[in-house]
Length: 450
Image (cartoon, rainbow, N blue to C red; front, side, top):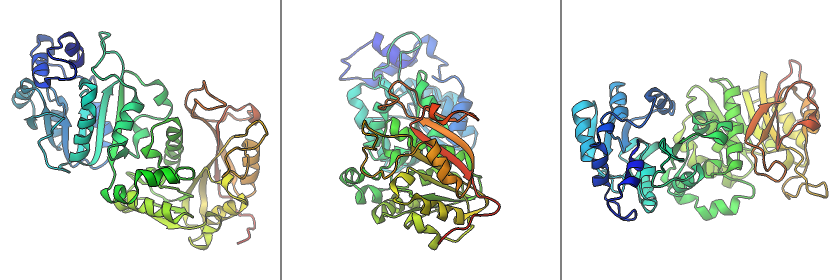
């Protein structure tokens, strides 16, 4: 049994005026909760948290009986656990390694920017809904870098509901509006297709946005730019999931130690995905928009020393970048915007090293009843045949992928999918909102015009 379950059976005060200390002191004194740590496999949590990178000083909010703090401390980390229950904290101080303090998530007893990493498992959902916003603000206030959350979103084991039972998107929006963004490795933790079938727990991983970026690029600024440029790590919907998934695929396909180029990088969120936790790689993003590149520098390059951004027309970026210098190049949702897509492919052909690879995506037959793409910024309509024909003039096509975000006009009932296209499959039979192609530089390049 979990705290939220017990709270609903024993509402000592109004749900909208909760005495959380009394509530959870009473809970932790129940005989069947003496050794309850609220998670089944602590090693899964440890692996996921450590994979996010440098953890620094850690705060575990709602630490309960201290199992996670104990394990992290024994792994050599500097960890503090805090819980509203004095009963739980007394237990931790007697039985667990680590630092422990009684306190509430609604008013954390720490200065601003006190902890590099904040962890909270099975805690937030056990607050009344009116208390979620102040709790989120407190998390954002005291964290420096990253946040790892485990949240129950469905009925508990005994068919009871936590105090605040909401889906992933509801939780993400609350944190995104507070000055955090999705962590670039969010789909390392919960892959794109698994978002469709999440179980009772969701894992939300977040990253603090640099203060200067929040000051220089307001919500109004981002809204005005959104038709062409969006930061998908600051949105929560199926489309943003799909954009992140394409970069996650690229991350898995490119070498761990490589020189990577993101052509038409937009607001740089995908370039950051390619770069994150790859200290031996050098990642470069280019875009024609000066505003977009300034956003990239303020938001992402400022925290990643191996990440850089440059203003360049991607059709002729080979004039600014050294030829045969990149192991891997990405360009998503670009070709349909160019009056002459061949120019981009010529540049990519020149910039790739021998054996270097290129991954791109385009919308698949995004047309209305008239047969035209209703997006005024799209100058071409692509399908698999047209995309393969174009790329094959310059590179050898290796693999095709089909992606669906679901809930769209053509595939409203389809789940999220990103899968390889089976060999010999007829292209017109492939269900896809986006066509993706992985290609490689030929041993002997075709003649190009600079």
